[in-house]
Image (cartoon, rainbow, N blue to C red; front, side, top):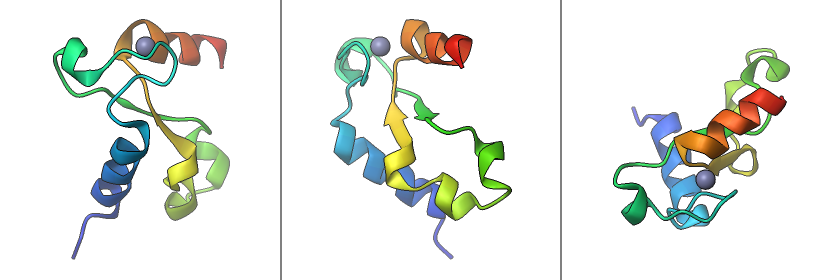
Length: 74
Ligand SMILES: [Zn+2]
């Protein structure tokens, strides 16, 4: 069985082209894999993980400061 999370993660990678969607930092410059951020919190989907992991809900952010800032704001 294929890991659906892994599939969605790869799709998000392709879409974002390995750059932080807030500051434009590339994964190459970052030096490691950029984390995936769920734009809409997982709990909002009442366990509907398929919808929660839909491509449109995933973006790539550098851990600091962008990912951290998003969670601070939210
Ligand atoms: Zn960033």
